[in-house]
Figure: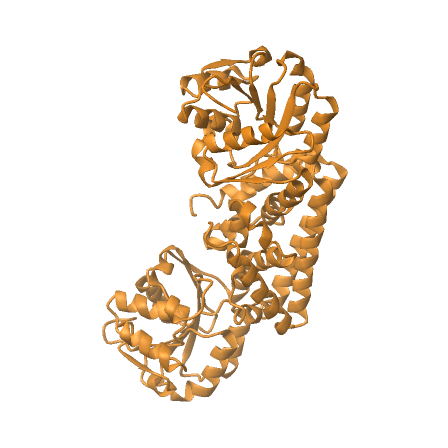
Length: 283
Length: 283
């Protein structure tokens, strides 16, 4: 478990890594930070979010807990290259938005004296970089722990403790499969819907006429183009199935309009209204 | 133009008609109200939103301005049945969410000594009925005037004045075709997307995991099942084309994921981010 003597190092001081560092600092924990950009390291130092920082992976040598806030493929290659630096017993965790692929890749080469516990903090913004870091993002967000049969009970407890220190609203536990299926629908599909609404034709001339509904549906169409394609591809099976199902559902509704099937439309609108109630009181 | 002596009558004291009455009252105008439900009439009276009310259409006999806040087919049939009651020169307006059909239907039978100016207040809530009326809805909403070649300049000015009295944020003018094409994309399509996201499978068990994105995209999935199917069908051509285009756009994105076309995905995400900026600062 984490106490005042635990050495915690964050690798990757971007939007999320920076927000983690800020949240740890707010909670009175001194953490270290590593980033390939000198500027990100000095920014985190100036803000008082890290006690020590470096562009060199060697800073991770004597850490107890290593938090990698990196894009999935960068995380995997960083670990491949640098796990030799870590001391036995270091607990590694991550923030990546897809899990099956990352978990199995890491398991395939991880030193047996290290442990990796996968985590997904479901928080983000449409901007990149530490200058947009904001620890208050976590107060209304879910923290998902994604253990496998390789994980110790102690590692799961430590992940929970991290989520508590960072002040996440809710902590859940899912398998990698459950996680990726859920994220395909709730997050990845919705981002692709928002993006597709913007891309299907140029509608910027309609901005004057938009009400809340169009703005609500496209808020997440401002999106980090470096990160998301990789996340989509690492969840291809679940995600393309969701996309195809939604396209079919839309076309089915179009057919009801074309054939004037008011009764079936009403049934679907009532069903949608009922189901949406399950999500109320949380927004 | 409207002044202190103008007799204004609202037909249909539902969510929108009730909000109109409330907004007129707030602005110091005494209006009359007609509804088939005695309860809606007495509620509006108790609230002080109408000076006179009735379940009888006869109350409209000496009105200068008649505002019909009715579902499209109810509006058309009410006018067919009751236009004989109106005095020469009465200006009629409406609130219906589709225009081509309503405008041409009304034009086909309207007495030549009456004038109809079509209007669409782009405001609403997911609830029905006068008990949910809320004049403050208009402060951030667009009011669209949809004149035809039959309309006088005076009628357009009066419609603008109504929007000002009701304190709409913005007033625009569109042709019936422009209106229906715009509304198909910005409003009707987005509602069908939200509904389809709820209906594609039962995801209520995922409520615990939802972040803002899913909630934003499905907020409007709570929907009035009596009103929308009719609006969809009255805009069938534009709307089904939009649905089909969006379904194709989604499937195209799915294909990019399947084939690992990162470059094209990035291009689409950058384009979507750029276009979405046109809608910023307004939400």
